[in-house]
Image (cartoon, rainbow, N blue to C red; front, side, top):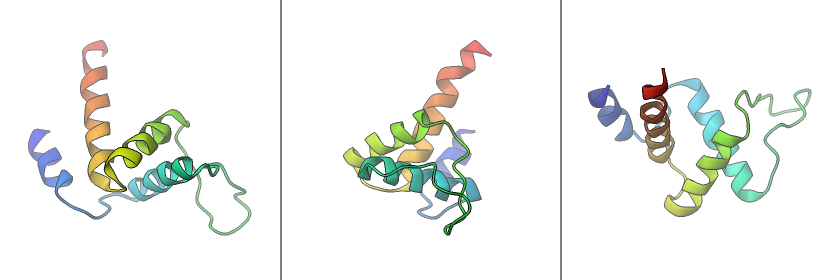
Length: 86
């Protein structure tokens, strides 16, 4: 897992489809916009995560800028934090 995180954290582009949506949700929250828009209008993007995770991403974006690196680091931190409870 560590080697995958190292490789992924250095790649500045989207690795999977959901990453871009989560990044945009974080940007929307940071700007004060909504993340659950009208799915019958363009752009047809559905926010599939509850608002807590994009809110955490928005805080990181305010501190470190918009990038996939913080999103991936936050995912790793949450994964390692929840691991002992599984």
